[in-house]
Length: 80
Image 1 (cartoon, rainbow, N blue to C red):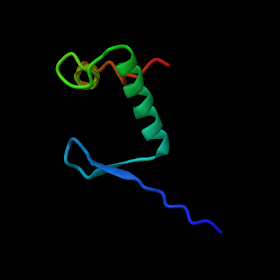
Image 2: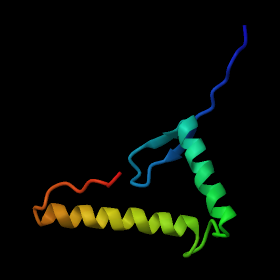
Image 3: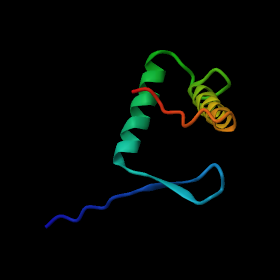
């Protein structure tokens, strides 16, 4: 029999409301995103880097959801 150790990385939630666990799929998706950014010459940090772009996208999505809620326009859903 083989023992398998599964490591789960834990991050503090941005709102301080606990922790967020990353599973294997999360790790793979993050790795793919970082690899693609590097292969296209995008820096990972800085205002124009991957993290800055992700931060802006998340902030813009939150702003849009809040505005739609306050205006009574209903729930905003991502296009797939």
